[in-house]
Image (cartoon, rainbow over all chains, first blue to last red; front, side, top):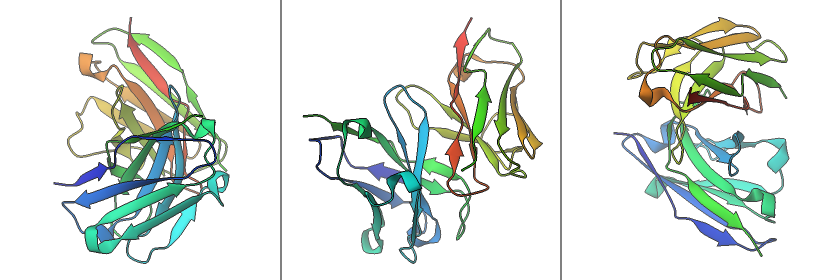
Length: 121
Length: 107
């Protein structure tokens, strides 16, 4: 069965960076785009971008351009999302989510359990 | 970016009720719309994609309709496990965007 297991909660100071991992199992990792979505406390969902695990190609929402980097390690079926120059309003739960269809970008079906990133001085 | 207006933001209903949630787009998106359910402390779960196609394993009391700019999620007979927050999402154009969410609470 498809599983996405994310790394544990993080506490960071403003200006620091955080790197969240997402280990995939139960399917061919390189066959499906991986999305990243975040959710601030009590707020809605915000799409951040995607990575093509096969090619390493990425597409980031403009809001995060210059601060976010999505990468992958195909040898261990793991995707990563790094966010730099953290601010207090980056405090959120960050989710990885696999696209529903192979080799194309549509909408996510399987989601990780989420990683809480708290930014506080 | 495509703007989405989801309504209502809060819906009070009773078990057995029929409920509808609306999602309106700032421009046409054909049928590139999904609906998600999210319960507190949990990741979202995909209910419907392509505006009206039920995701595998989702109960048939959930249905979706619409195309272009206006979409609807209907729960035909609300069950206790359906009290949650629902989000629409467009994947027609970059960046993908989510509606603001509709919390369905017990009346």
